[in-house]
Image (tube, rainbow over all chains, first blue to last red; front, side):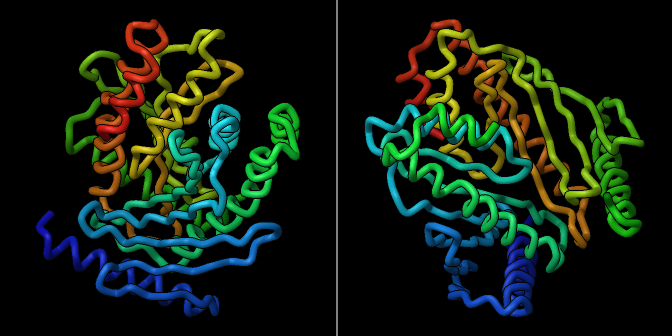
Length: 158
Length: 160
């Protein structure tokens, strides 16, 4: 697909994303030149920050949320097991653990290649991301801090 | 339970998926009741079985490919590190790992909710999945046969 056409689809997706968030009364920061937006959500336990990127080159909408803590070095293996357990239960999105830094990032992606994503699709993507991160961020944090064991984490998610 | 509109959207998406595969003369089996297609690709090293399912309730199209290997019990924890390493390098899709069974499944999903979905999107889903799986399946296989080390696997996944 030629670059010009890719950009047209990307701008369409970006405009729909902004309209969707405006319609649900969501506050966010726009970076129009980069086709990105950022927003924060309170969450039940831990605040959540999200970055939504409309990737014109790949024709993808990418939602990313970096959890606000790093798994300690001695918790990396448990973190790896825990993220695998979570991911196996998810229908959409995944938690990605950087085994070197201990950072955990939630990632959810959808293609819009030669497609027009509706507001409902984008609303779904944003809401499911918020829900999923909110559901698991505190558990991963508690695991990292030793407040729960890996066995307890597994039990909680069985 | 999907309403009539969601069911219609799902059927349109399923038809578009089949049309895309037909246009590439790709052989596949389809289950129209379940809105699922089963196909595969040869791959450089290992075969790549593919299942694409349109879920009318969730309004998702999901591609799954189970790797033709089982992680040996003694490597189950190490495999979690390898899977995380592979996933961290990805932009779309991820490997889901079941520590209990030792099975690894590639998953890639897109929303179809109230959207106009072009055939190119399905083409992208299938081809990017085949590329990613083909890139990693033999590495996972060699890792669990101890032909390469975890460090070598991690170095490979960092290359992207």
